[in-house]
Picture (cartoon, rainbow, N blue to C red):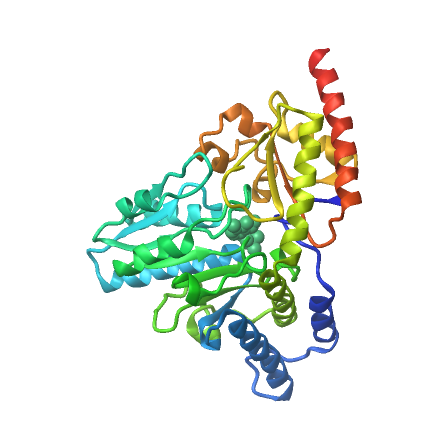
Length: 387
Ligand SMILES: Cc1ncc(COP(=O)(O)O)c(C=O)c1O
């Protein structure tokens, strides 16, 4: 089995597994309990919070544990928009980018469609980048919140976040960054980026599924989007997933260290380039999307003119190679990727696209195996098309 779908999810790293197993086996108490078992569970959550906060150069109180990236983004956007609209009733405008993940885009559209906010979806250029001038022009006196992802899940494109966040800060506008793909791959220190909130999820950085966090700058108030108890300082009710939170903290430490060291990124970038060179040799008509933008070292987004991305994906799957034909969250959907369409890629080409995303276990033999499988699949497809 060749797995080149790390932007969808990553395997659990030994450090996360090691942190989780004792808790899965022995954890008895609820962290809200006041007896000894409860205190032990609480201590595990507190320790994880301290560890994640220190990785971000943040205060423990600024970390809100959630169930993952989708919940973190929803909490940030719905929670901040609702809370800060109440502060200033005339301020009701939101800004995001056209290539955001649906966790952001759909949350923003729901605020616009159901709660009376105005929303501007800033277009991107052909390389998938938000132009700071275009972004600045979208900001209005009544804008309260903007959200732009640090790195795109489909193309790997890295946005000029510090610049965009700076434009918001100058105008007193809150800025949320979806760091789900970036955290643990490139340095993501909120203080350096100048953002107000950051969303991340453990399963994208070799931690478990079902745990994520929202970092929210202290002093910024937020409205909980769920109703229940007083957990997470009344910002996210619900019993904490203690083993997953502990696993997330352990995985985050490894991933952040790796991201700061750059060695793994260089290794993955050279394998990704070998993959792209191989693809060009097999199919000289192949198009690498976002080829002139800064992109994550592990991501390669390629359109194969005349092919169908879903059929390619299935052909590769039969060959034992797991890739994605776009956002993993769109599996089962036959819609062309909104990210590629926003970059001006034609509908036909967008439908002919495959995303390869590499990870820690990717080696040169894995790339060579992928290229062999791809050659067989493309040959079969072209025979089928000619027949
Ligand atoms: C950029 C981005 N944001 C948000 C999410 C949602 O994260 P989760 O799967 O943890 O809900 C994803 C998942 O693919 C993503 O890639």
